[in-house]
Figure 1 (cartoon, rainbow, N blue to C red):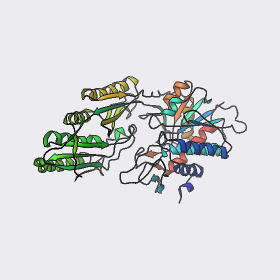
Figure 2 (figure 1 turned 180 degrees about the vertical axis):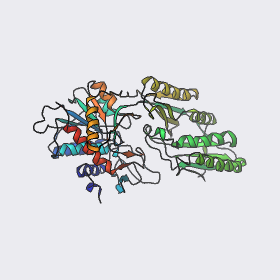
Figure 3 (figure 1 turned 120 degrees about the vertical axis):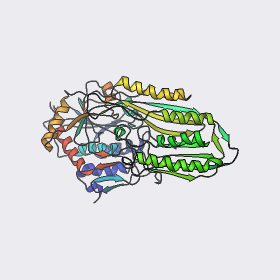
Length: 483
């Protein structure tokens, strides 16, 4: 069976088409052109703002002209992550999606169902002739994943709807009414290259096979962080076996838990035997610690091509200490919502760039003051290590409104259709809804979607049966919007 043959056919047909269009964050030109051309071909009213956000409109069906206008919203861009052994160009190549049992997956890369399935659902609604609804606006935003740029740049007056349904959630049967705010903290270490003198051997350690995933929604799963694991080994080897670092590279995206990392370094010949014994011991200890959560974890030591330079030992020491001290994971659970993360931080990436070591971290919280607190905690670690630290402006959370009209409609609809009550909660991830409220303070909002798993990683997948339930729920909600 082909993806386009799955039910609901229109949603899957459009998702398959979207997979053919490259759409990395900040490089949405191709998907923007695709959507604008598609709207023209289907005689759908569409406009684009200066930043690249698109708004399409569909008139009400006969007799429903007086219903409140509903905005359906998703983002065009996708997280671009691949396995290290996969040759793939996200700027030009089509995602290779395939069916595996009850799931749709991609071959070695992120699938882009976050939020391509939301985009496809909007296209389905815009072309559907079998549903009754009031006036509909479909908002497609740019660069949600790496800066919420489209939502930040959204101008007052671009939208006219009263109700917004965000289609960027990942748990079918759950309705989201709030989300965490976030901020990034970036540290930069300047270093000098030093020539190696004496008798040394060159090595490389690779940490790979970790699950990774979304740094908000998956942060409470206890998954390993490749940067923390690798640094733990290097820190001890630096203190005890004279390790000299040439390069450390781990993680890629601020909003993904890092899955892979590697380092290349030298060890003085006199310590090689002891170092190898230590490596064998520590790698087995770490794998045992993660045996339940990370059964595919690999920590591999190989000899490397001859290394001629290392970074200065002062910077090396400060880097290893800062990465060791930098917190990662859940900082606080919600006091008001059971099993809900309130505050967290992600040690996302370590990159060597033209004489600078750049360490990127990301903090989240549903409480603005705690978001600031954890960001300052992380900043203080790197300040103490002598790094140059900067923080972005961040983005606001979305405070829950349990008295929301659209929430009541969505709850009643779900229970009527499927015979059980949906879970209503906040999500420990950044949705664009908080920024929409800054521009449109009277919007009434909810978020729901099909079941996605391991988003922001090459294991990303969407559960096929939940897409049909998602579509039925969305259609029924639209049919029950009041005047």
